[in-house]
Length: 277
Image 1: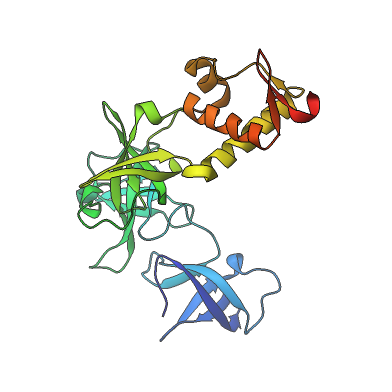
Image 2: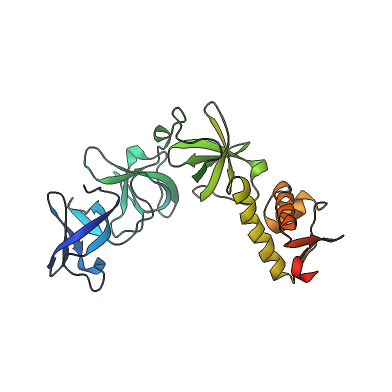
């Protein structure tokens, strides 16, 4: 079964002057010459992305778009017509957003957060700015401590609304954020807390995995600074955030773990790598 708007592994059925034809369920699908990998032969299997061209023919490409069907991505407007706008999504054929699917009239050169979907009437891939109808916390597919993919949706007084796994929404609170982020950024985080239909998320990984990641960062910074850093558990949260990009709580957990592993030692003025003592 082939899936439009997704990657498919298809076998080369025959060669032609203008490309190769791939085996579909009930049709042959053209992969134009410019996208055929060197050395391709009949019988080879190729991973291709499937979409419809301007003449509504199903076509394959080895190009990789910025998103596939179901993804929520930040895309730039290429051109605008009375019927809608066209977005650059990494393929030769731009992605269409009908005027009825725009929150405000799109402008050329601007970026917009959109969901890629398959239009039920035409079967073609399209995009929409109207994301809320695709997002719900009524039936959750995640639980606390799950690692998740996040897309920054919009800013609020308490933090940022983020889209979780393209399905749900959560809050990344300002006091849990130790780096600058922008609308449309793709991030990795985990579920900190679920209360009813309210979800709080944090960037990074849960538990000891998160500490291990920060441990590598501190060890790298020690190596880059001759094995010594003038920071310790009495340093201010602001100093730690500015230099390490992490909260003081995470910093203390991490240096505690490194000390127990005998990778660092504490001094009166900071921390040293064990081999530099």
